[in-house]
Image (tube, rainbow, N blue to C red; front, side, top):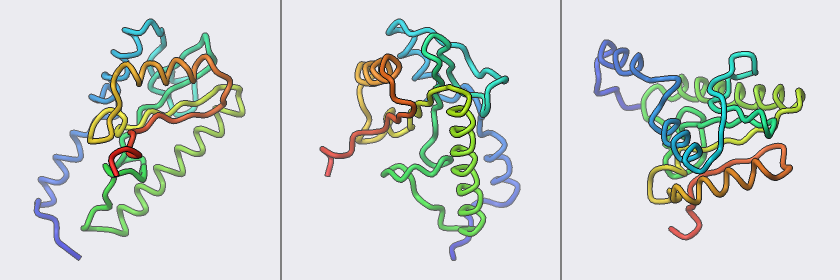
Length: 156
């Protein structure tokens, strides 16, 4: 096991600065979708999980998930080397909560789209036009769930 290079006080300060809303990926998705003509509501508290974007016209919600915090198995996700048991429990619970929220939304007739951080950054990121096109296609379709992630098939 490796030790943390930061003191507990420094690590605490870093962790307190992590935002739950208005993150850079979320702001990017909002800007791109708004520019493409899609209209939405932000973080509706009455819905399970307080989705990042709500599209009442399509009875659909959109979550912007960070690949680390929501344990997306893509090249952007790496297990921390320190406190592995803590992180496995923490990130495992986040993934369980995501599944629970999705189930609750689906049971109440909402459709759920997840945009992963890797779609917006890294070697596999997609263009903003592609993001808007994929989101619009899903919204106008009939699938109850969907995900937009980075394109790593051509980068192998």
